[in-house]
Image (tube, rainbow, N blue to C red; front, side, top):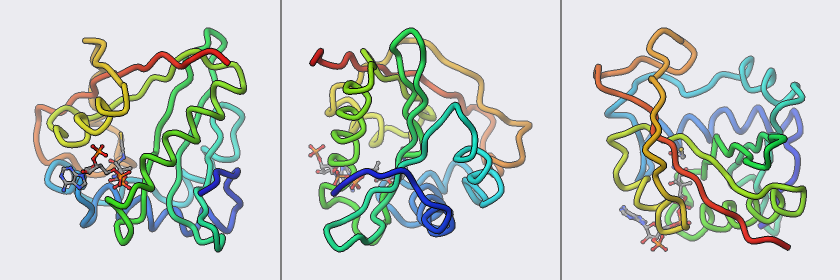
Length: 171
Ligand SMILES: CC(C)(COP(=O)(O)OP(=O)(O)OC[C@H]1O[C@@H](n2cnc3c(N)ncnc32)[C@H](O)[C@@H]1OP(=O)(O)O)[C@@H](O)C(=O)NCCC(=O)NCCS
């Protein structure tokens, strides 16, 4: 598995993979919390075309698109990792762990000292998965963007985003 900057062709496929991973049938699906798509092509192209965030494709040995992850560098060394997704057809086979390891390696090689992620409360199995990767809850929370129609339709009124961080080893 290797991470490479997503091409526009990849982004079109990633819309499907991200929506299936977050809102479809995967083992960490959030479909019972939020309905509708997680992302659309317009938003994804905007994110990938900007300077704040790089969207990476995860490609298998045969160049098949397995999933993706985004990294947003920060001057204080705490990079933000988001939009981690693995095609549900191949989930629970180690790809998510490989993407996280590659993203952390890339970040540390480019100056990151820690990584921050935001996860919706109630996603217990996903939070446990991150904790097994060394991420720890900071106690900080952010409000769920209830008024942003691009993130889908929330199905309950007690959603919030919890923050987890991980210190990266120095190289
Ligand atoms: C979270 C995600 C990236 C993980 O990728 P993955 O390829 O499925 O996960 P991996 O195969 O690398 O990891 C499997 C681990 O989860 C465990 N696991 C697998 N299926 C499970 C299940 N049904 N319930 C609980 N744990 C499970 C495995 O035992 C293994 O445990 P380990 O951490 O002790 O090794 C993927 O499920 C995904 O795309 N989720 C939807 C998008 C999302 O929520 N992204 C994060 C947003 S913050």
